[in-house]
Amino acid sequence: MPYAHPFFRLAQQADTCSEQDFLTYAEMNPQRQWGEMLPLAVGLSLIDSEAKARKNLKLPMFRQYKGIINLVLNPTDGVVKQTGAHQSHYTWWRTKAFEYTNQKMLAI
Amino acid sequence: MRQLTLMHTLEFYDVPQILTAVDATGTHYLCTLYAQDKDACRYLGVQISEPRLRAFIGGQLDLRSTYTAPEVENALYIVEARQAILTATTLLSQQDVTEDMLPEHGYVYDATDVLEDAESQTDTYQLEVPVNDRMTFSTLISRMGWHALSLGRDWKKMAML
Image (cartoon, rainbow over all chains, first blue to last red; front, side, top):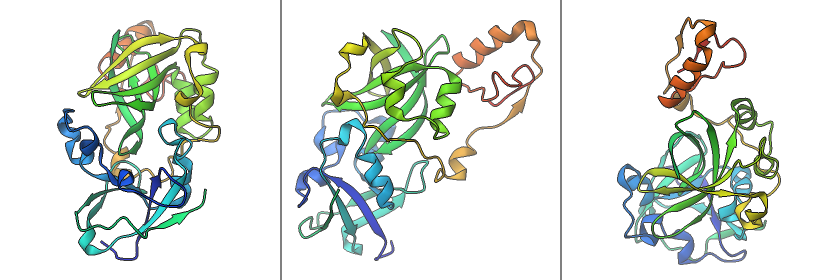
């Protein structure tokens, strides 16, 4: 994983991110059967295009979101892989070593 | 209730956000996630013609307008994804659709960063189809979950399956 590769993730609050912003769908819904979607459900989506991240805020699920987190990950933070049809989309399988505090927030 | 077959995931963020599906009659649905709970993801689905769906994928149509100005009446549904099964559960009137179910103005799909590998997951065939069998052919390929991109243009001769 390139250390300096910038990634963007949507945040519920404008000024600060919280643990909620880094919960996977599998963590939020432990009873749900994910089937072949399980590898993605236990990961977090990242986007490497700020413009694309901003556009996703227009989708119904994210209209209440107020911020964008600009992440620069360290090797100890987990594994990132490009996934899905869009070149800009990555899945991040994060480790518990990741510290969500002090992440850079972008104004929207 | 009618079961749908997933055709394409157009936008993925943690879970599929925008997808296309088809029902047993070959009708296309464009579905956008608006809610989820511990059991299911809920999408606002709209029945959509193939040319209009192509226009959306081609970036010529705002996502919101597909829901606020559907082509026909009785085109809006709640579509539930439950354990990988897609079902159109509830017919909605335009008045049933609340603002929190809709995308904001300005979401235009961008396929420019779609990977070639994703595109090449389909094979292309040329078929000679008698004009008299046009409707049968159309129904058949839809039921198989295939896609005829060239329908309406030169579709009696060629279909991309």
